[in-house]
Length: 173
Figure 1 (cartoon, rainbow, N blue to C red):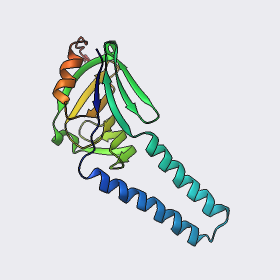
Figure 2: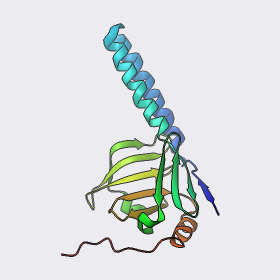
Figure 3: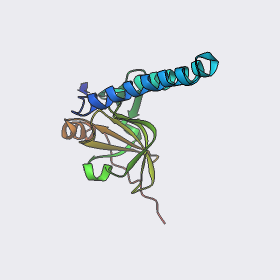
């Protein structure tokens, strides 16, 4: 049986998204005036447009859980985590996420997604969230961590725990 959990935007996300769009437009106009047209101005504007397009294509849309895997669907890409590759799943408190620094990702542009550095554990993590809260941590057998946010996080955890066998990912010293 397939379960679909749609992302719902947080209350501040639409405002920060509009700010990002206005910032990109203002930067493009500013560069056009500074360089008075020409190839340098066009090159910078195309770079801004490419970054904007990359951010739009990476916006998380929904989480699909079926009998074979968990699928995190974005606009243009899907992240698929097979159950045999999942070592564990748990709920994460919001205070644990306060030490996350974006490495290559978006903060507030239609959500929070991309690669982040957790400064407490010094680990690189993947975040797919529409709001900053109610996180679920999925750890794969290689030690990779994926964080998703969803209003129904307890239901997601219960659904996934039916299919996985918990693995010990700690190293023996």
